[in-house]
Image (cartoon, rainbow, N blue to C red; front, side, top):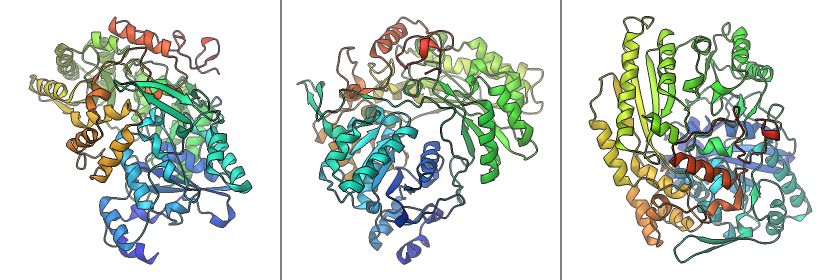
Length: 610
């Protein structure tokens, strides 16, 4: 492409747009029945770090009849030059325009990437709204965590895949191929697709509203199920997993091999959406994880291996797996990282095993500064456990520790915020009292404090979110608390969290808000340099809506939620019980201790057995 070659010579990071990386899949486009464009609505640097893209890219390309290619959101500089040159958005593998594909699939990882979906459709010359796309347009589909409440973007999509994607993706492609070969009709295809477990077709549901703006009714039509059941991959251990990744030529956020050792979480932290929508916990055997890791390192040449899950230290075969890994990673100078460690399951054995070739800092998430508030959110971590964990780390030579907290949690008081600094101060004192600490080194302790955003399918989905003004005042209070110079405190921008809160629990009326904001310049909203709070507030006002309605009001337990069309396999009765327990300051046991009958479908209450 001569036009593209000229552009690449004048933009930053041209490797984002060239393709041709090691491990890239190349097929004859005339030899496949279904072409799938996997779109990540953010930059190449971020998208290429995403495990879901790696997994589904390989899964689709393992089929002889299908070809999956990658598409990322180009920088604003690149987009401007593409428009000047008359180039539409293209795939990396074959440089094909997005309109040439059968299916255009977006992964929905974060609410503030919603305008980037329109940005990419706009650059591709594809109409925003599903109802405006005729038979000549690709099918536009979505999946990922935000799909459990996709209502704010429902009008832009033909369908969503809810839950685990490995099986439903293959079934959807099979159906599409069959319909295409027999004479494609979009409406007929969508009605048939709604019969696949885990597929949500928004156009088959009619939404009505009460005078106060709440949802009055969600009515299924054309034989669509009343509620769409989340797809759960039952045989996780034996499921497809790539034995190779595309290896970027330019630096990405997470440039390493990775193994998903287990899926789901047993803990039940009441603020954590992922902990509920990926239930039940399912593990892959240590033997298979080790084999996959070895093959990945062999084929990609990576020098770092990351063991991924929502809580890797809860993986029941972690120590045997680490033993197996170290039987070959030491010799090959491959380091091992565990990015998701629990305070209460970190041991000296795990510490010694993950030190490996290089020692970086450790990260833990107490989430709240006081035991009272940790009980409210069901974190089930005590200060004594945190002190024990810090001592283990310091005895092993660690001098860098990062602690994650949240502010704006339900029932929070200023004393809970003061507890963050107090707890961090105790950890600093522990470091200097530890006789086995690394001598001659000082401690670098950072406390990162994000703003709590209530999410669907959690016990806190009914809670009001703190207003921007409240969060600003709490951040000011936290910054002014006296603390050791060894402690650095960082906070998240409350304006960003406020808009995230609007879309996390939003409804279909927000589609016009997203379109309006995009046309007024909203793009790459997850990047601080591009985000504009005022632009979003103006867009909401223009559509007769307010941020307060979506983010800052308490909902009644009997209110119909926009996401009630989705059956996430977490019962509302369970969530209500947990919400009430939170306000009573009562904790609940994890899934291995006792089944709480959440609705995830474990046989006889035995976690992971389906």
